[in-house]
Image 1 (tube, rainbow, N blue to C red):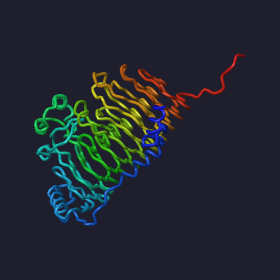
Image 2: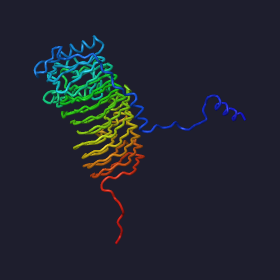
Image 3: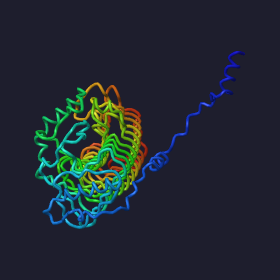
Image 4: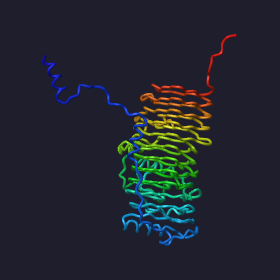
Length: 452
């Protein structure tokens, strides 16, 4: 009797007896909720012509002083839009953005950055391959800003093929030092790189920024990653064109960032088209800011890899949507999720829908043992949903899943996938609950033959 009265009490006085689970949102409902939180910044109506500040688009005159003056005017006036008219503008040093600023590159306008490393000093706070440090300034740099935009039909040329790009041959010592500082939790003020080191700067970086728009421009010849969204949120990138073939010329690299929309973009990159990251190893786990709510849709992929998650993803990546995209030419890997047991973190709730690839090495590749190295911090990879994906030819493999013995990749769902030709159809190891529904790799087998 006492037990009955106790149960009656908790049901009447606020503890629900209904144990039915909450309704799970569908993929489209989840995506649409995210889209509601991505709103481009409002562009200021306070317009300023760059040439009024002394810029000359003659391929000779340094336009950096004009940019500095125009941006200072925008800062004093609490916002503005700098219009860059047709012409070729040499910029010998970085453009440091301010709040409530839009730079509009009109059709026929081209920014060509100078190649003297001294011009990109003093060093600024940035990140390099998932480790925070001080380094040469990104060529276009926004730090702790709100409401910033780069728009128009002009060109941003990093002009780095014969200068910064070649530093990759000499970067190893500094690269390893940065990783050592990461693992040893070296104080940030002691992580001074820049002069005497060979860590290439990014072309464009938004660091701890909110409300970002990059639209319409063509980006080429970057010293390192093309566009790096670092610890930023509410980002819209649309109708951008890439023509970037230097080493590590990723297109977009969202890192520790959320609420990101990448749409209607023409990629043509020497490296990853989109590479989603969330910090490296110890520092990434300490920072603990997940990259999440990222939508990539209606894009044209071309380059090394289509969409990559990792390998620097130690704080975790979740809620990524790749929709209605196509690829042309050869792509080494279409969809590539990569980590290793140095990283930790997780990759989960990834949705790939209505995507077509032409020729690839591997169409879909998940690995928990990238570069065959690492120990102690296995990554949890699960809840990946692939639907309506086609591929013409995979010279290596159609689907590869490589988990780790102590933490298997699990709950991966393939539906309506057609790969016309593959040297290896499936390669699955340390994986569980891998579900296939209407999947054909190679020539479809129809009515079975019969003995005559």
